[in-house]
Length: 116
Image (cartoon, rainbow, N blue to C red; front, top):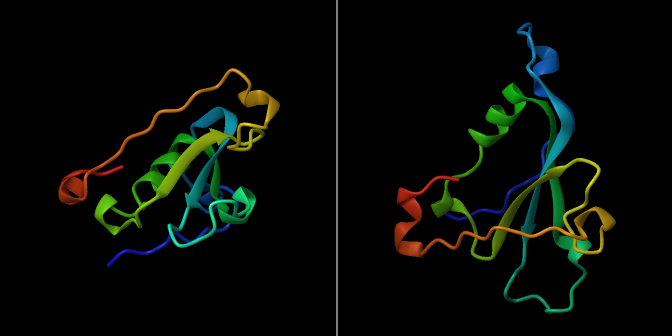
């Protein structure tokens, strides 16, 4: 069954945990975009862009990463992105001026064999 990812609450999950946090130098944010093939191609990018979680430590990174859906559960045309929290995942953001991207396309027949 394929599902769209729902955003979860903002902030660090480790604030509830008694363990020591391994802090990152910057805050980082996971983003999700689902571009429905049925929607108008000119639909507003910001309307399909969802902030999933912002992290500030290694423990939170692995908590989010280990709880992402498997590839075979994702909808086609779904994108996950990971950016510094002060950078929005769009080309118009000045901090992306010299940026690039990595794209991994997974064949449907291989989706069960690959994890994010």
